[in-house]
Image 1 (cartoon, rainbow, N blue to C red):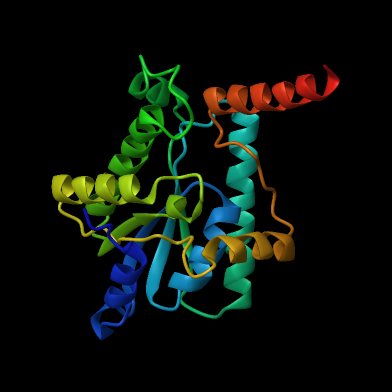
Image 2 (cartoon, one colour):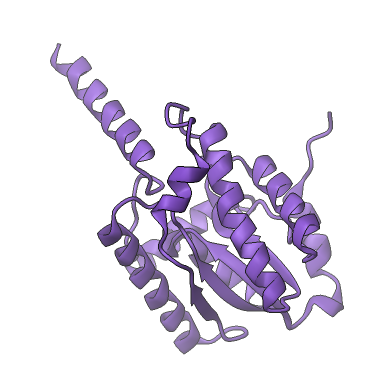
Length: 218
């Protein structure tokens, strides 16, 4: 089976003059991941960032990431360099995440539990993109080397068909996108985290850290 090149598909869309100034509803998982994506896409689209991440278990962590997202957008708008960026903060509803992944709690990170989480977030993104008459929707999640870009694009397309809003394909980690997001995080002093936000990811991270330490001590 031929693997799709989602970055090439995105570039082909951006080459079309009719995309200039169109409205994009961009789901964002956090400020660091959105940094490169916003700078890259704001030259083409009028972006509204949708911060919707019910997978984040702790409210304090959620609020810290949300505040950092808003700070980055304020900074980028002050700098200019493209269309102004707006933000829409979704509801903080961890119960919706727990319901969506019920029965998959033991799945390893990156597996089916994560796919259900992607479906939850992209479904809400597409629904609101439709309600707001946006021209496109997409997500910053494909910038992470730990996220399955093919699965994310498949789910995005499914939600596009369900709600009738075009999904913008992406693989933002390509063309050194992930590397640039790290550099931009340093430039803007962004808070970076080493787990997605859910209790399962946090526990898996702690287990790996303990295992490594235990291995050295034994």
